[in-house]
Amino acid sequence: MKRRVLNRKKTGAKPPGRKRIAKRLPGGRIERLNLLLQLGRILNSTLDPREVRRRAMEAATRLMKAEVGSLLLFDTKREHLYFEVALGEKEEMVKTVTLTVGEGIAGWVAKKGEPLLVNRPDKDPRFFKGVDGKTGYKTRNMICVPVKTKGKVVGVLEAINKKGTRGFSNEDLSLFASLADLVAIALDNARLYQELEEMFFQTAESLSDAIEKRDPYTGGHTKRVTTYSLAIARHLLLKPDETKWLRLASVLHDVGKIGIEDQILRKQEPLSREEYNIIKHHSNIGAEIITHVRQLREIVPGVKYHHEQIDGGGYPEGLKGEQMPLLAKIVAVADTYDAMTTDRPYRKAKPKEVALGELKKCSGTQFDKNVVEAFVQAYQNGEI
Image 1 (cartoon, rainbow, N blue to C red):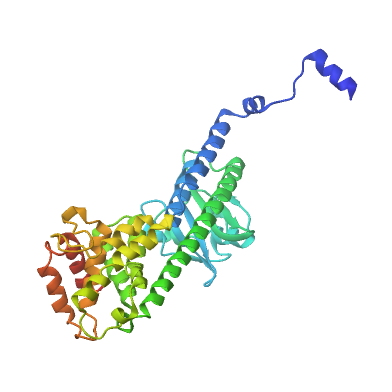
Image 2 (spheres, rainbow, N blue to C red; image 1 turned 60 degrees about the horizontal axis):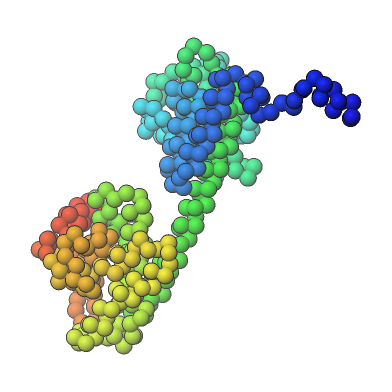
């Protein structure tokens, strides 16, 4: 051991460092490794499952320098693979195709759990010609790797037709397998986040149901308001995050009624002025409850101001026009329509067409014009 140290001192030899190793690698490989790291960061920068899948395919075609690519996911109930994302002009057509496990190159990869490189698919008996036949696309070569989480194959990543004259290489296969590992992590993270989010929504819905049970005349009110609100959102082209907050605001818009006495909530006659003033406090109470949950602060305006009116005649603050938040405008229309079309102990429900006419009549005064228009479109489409 001493002799080795002395020799190193005499010759000035140094152990190879990262920079020296990097210098030995071909420039193109270093560039592709850096691209792989960059793509990994992009993949894991979102928890939206759809966006993760789309980014996975964009990463696959970019890293492999391929013309097109596809992500197939495994349907455990039906035991087949389906095209979740297929980049290229024929995406919608490709997505109608399904493969049984073991069928085609992708099916073989899913069954064996091993990556596969095929530079002459027309000579490979495992190649499934159905996709090419359906789309008119010519597959010259392809590379296919399994996407695994916790040791189980959950999907298959494909890159098709290497750009240029050469086919895919073993180096491509190694890099593609590494990308599949990153895709698997991103997909699993998105799935877990989605499950937690859905559990949170269900908890909120259960809380609303429990509060509704105090008032036998409003059963199902929250679910209907949520359905109407989301129908409006589709026609207003709300962003996914806005739609998510709207769903929660709709579910919890009456949570403040937990602070209202039963004798008022259950009263079978019209409320007195004093009782009406008391029940008006429910929007402030609800907002105060939700404010304590940091993750729910985005929906506070929807809960607090869903009884405001465009002309300033609402409560609790008499907001006017654009002072009224969008979430509150939407919940206000959905809430009012449901109130008009359901029975109350002191009055019968109005026919749907009559209630729709009331919304149109009050558009621009009590309700936002764009929201009412979106509601009418949803109603005419049979969504409400």
